[in-house]
Length: 206
Ligand code: 3PG
Image (tube, rainbow, N blue to C red; front, side):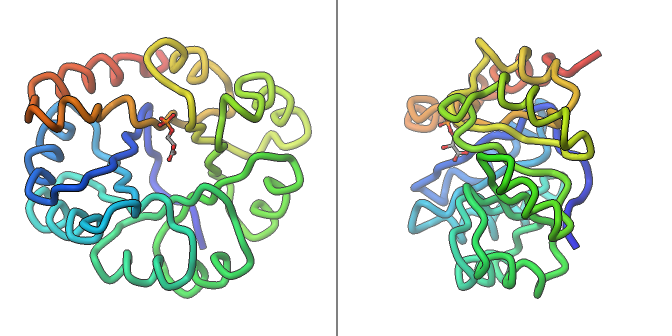
């Protein structure tokens, strides 16, 4: 099991109510160089969004985010998710992940949680909620005893601090909802989302 192809440097956290926008949004992101798209299971249309992107935008790697339990993960896999992300890590979720040969990024916020996920074979972890639990200082501290781990921090990250996170040796990518602002979705501002995405991709570590 378990981790995967390398995402980065940024991964949008997508909260989409209207599945009719999914394909245009995915094209805007992929055309700008962002291929890993995390579609959160926070809306009624999320599974439909995943299926539409998987079907119509083959260059996109569409994943399911906010996976909270076994049943959700199974349905996300059936909908076509190519990876999963969770804000935390439970025994029930761990068992469900092991049943699918699909990459997964479990969420952690402490050294103990990171050790548990590592012991189950995960080496790429989501740090959530990154800024609230210590942000860059925590990541620097974890790198000492756990140098084999890589993180995808999310929660409170934006253009103002993403580059500082990406400069850390144990940060694989940063995630966030800032890449797909609600106002841009409301106005179908695909050019604006593309411009934001290009700016974010330019943060890639040299
Ligand atoms: C997540 O689901 O990963 C976070 O809620 C994203 O946090 P953000 O909205 O602060 O980017």
